[in-house]
Image (cartoon, rainbow, N blue to C red):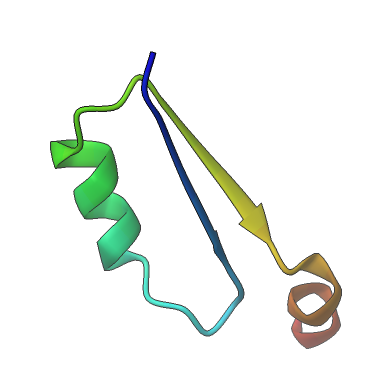
Length: 42
């Protein structure tokens, strides 16, 4: 089983994650988001 993981916040680009999702040889993709700052900016 291969797991891809990443982290980010509202100012990050989505393109690198899309590349991993589309081209990575992974079974699962997991992200952690900095919710405190992201929610404050929403």
